[in-house]
Length: 91
Image 1 (cartoon, one colour):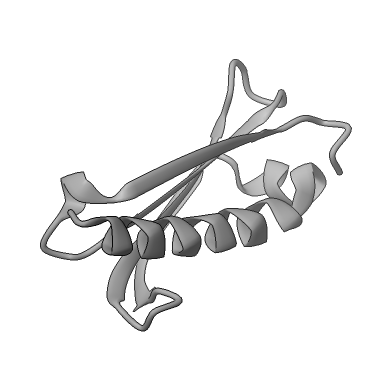
Image 2: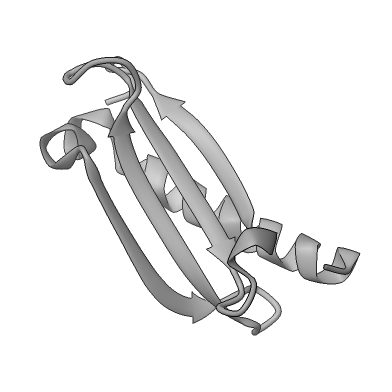
């Protein structure tokens, strides 16, 4: 993957991770664990797949691990994956 494509996928992943985490722990806890994959467009207009997952970090009711993976449909392994943890006090 060239640097321009990687930068575009990373920008899309950062934007998606921000949106995912903006929901906050309190809103996400009732639907954790959960995941979804959908198609959309990167900031540069590239068709991509967005995968969003919410999982308990250690035990149910604890911290929530938020994972976002953005990739071109033909190149799953070459995508960009970002992770952030939401703690209970991040409601």
